Image 1 (cartoon, rainbow, N blue to C red):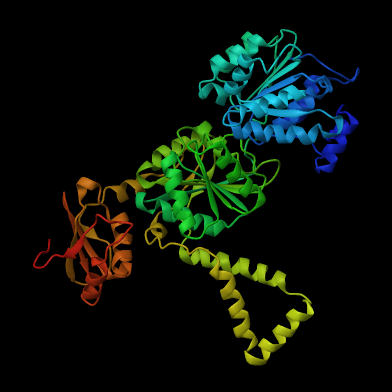
Image 2 (cartoon, rainbow, N blue to C red; image 1 turned 180 degrees about the horizontal axis):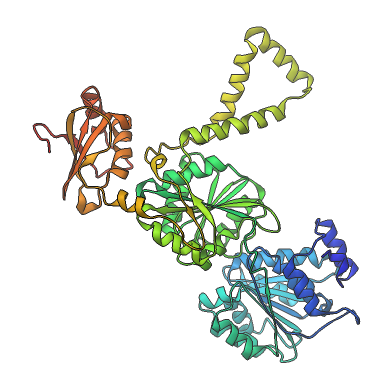
Length: 554
């Protein structure tokens, strides 16, 4: 349904049209139709309990729904509560442009910001206040926020606020608000706690379940199985293979965010980090760099990225598996928003494949397992993009550019000049990583029914510790100081040895893994060079020592 078919005030319609919004999303239609008396053209005082997935447009839905309750009153008329600072600020930004032509002032009250500045903004008069529960309580205690004239309360991402432990604060705020008000409660899921909260603090709330059947329909899911030590390299190759405008990479911990962010920056990615340990100014700066296009990769934790809207985000990478299906959906919902297409990539440790598939089935996600993109895959993608990007530069050109081009053509063949242009374009691209094992992993579909043959996985996992992993002849035996006690496995030993010794997979023969060490065979032609290279200290594996096992063989 089009916005101009809904009972929305002309100034608001003008702002929507200026932003390019013409078609309302299902949640916007449902909320507006439940809020507006079409015949009388006025707002209902109806409470709502709305379940809708992230990315469905619910901020604009409640913004338009409460607009008839607003005026240029100097005390708050609408209070919106959000679980995190970033989400509150994002909501405030969207409401500011929606209400621009009707002269309604919007301000924020969020933790981590200067509370005295917020007090001044409240004293100056704001009809809409968007805040986090803890900071709203602070202003209530100080007397700087008065709710006497409040006409509506909106709880955004209510399930997340309860998960973060804000129940007491929410109840105290709702008790302080006037009884004659509208209460609109939005939640991605409706657990019992949410339903109980709505029953206690709303009046015969109309329950709307919107978009549950088509959630994330615009997201393509891909799964890659990786060895534990290949995860970081896998992230690099996934980012390089997709090379989208903006990508979000999710880690389970703040430490993981810091480590992966540093690694990506070191490799040449324009990346920023977002985690709970950063100050509010640092978090705002990171998001601003992504929105302005100066950074293209945001590495973040679940809580830090809750509800963040980055319109250009076309890729989400689950570097660490989420804890449950809800988190998986919230993470993935950062892409594929408002009708745009997106991709979510799941990196699962090989030993955790079963758990990963249970998680996907619980989220009703369909997709498939495939190998991590290889160096050759990334190069092929680069070639396709370079043809388009360099081709887009071809045109008539400025006179001074044509003069230089003519001089160059007099000195060099055209093919060499084109090659130099391509080489210059490649120079700014981070290098892809060698992942010798990923190409051998069997791909299989994961679906909501879990219909998949696991026998091949069991055969792979049950292979004996001593086995041939290469095609080489009888060779020279070496040892590395890691064994079964430290989960040694050829799946990650092989690529590490190739990297340390500057050899290929075909140059390695048999492996024999004992409790404390691993013996392995190197081609006689490569043994001396391997020994010299492997002796060099390695910052990625500083504790692994590789030496010749003279006179020893299994």
